[in-house]
Image (cartoon, rainbow, N blue to C red; front, top):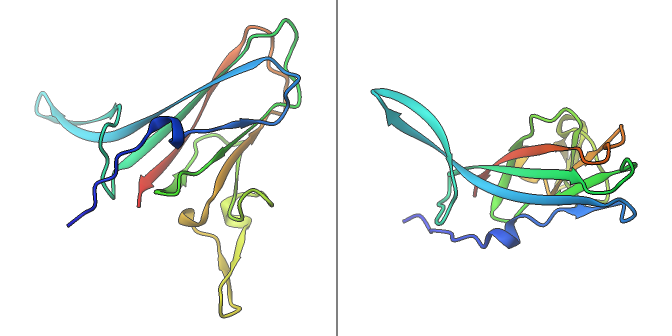
Amino acid sequence: MMKRLVFALAALLSPALAHAANDVALTSAVFVEKTVLANGQQKIVLEEPSLVVPGDKLVFVLNYRNRGATPATDFVVTNPMPGAVAFQSSPDQAAVVSIDGGRSWGTLSSLKVKESDGTVRGARPEDVTHVRWTFAKAIPAGQGGKLSFRGVVR
């Protein structure tokens, strides 16, 4: 029998801002991706979760907005992966991941995991502990955007 998981959304998404001098607001949401039948055709929809089970596909969305009067520079968003969720992907080209609790960063394909027997293998999505975005350009005053990543309930 599959164990049902109820998530406290506040605990699921706890992104951290790395540059406190900027006045950038960050909000987050998580959605369950479902396939529904609409007018005889399958359609993918995003719904707010109240109950999720292993195998459910999740989409995490982080919205940011510079509330300051000047451009926000050196802005970094780091989001830990909830323990009950395995990372899948991010459509954002600037996203990098960590597989060691945030000590080192890179693309998933560049990271290696050392197994207990000493062998080394390429990192897999389920190894990801954090997702990070570093903004190469300043965020203009009053402007914002959206970051996202996908996961699956373990």
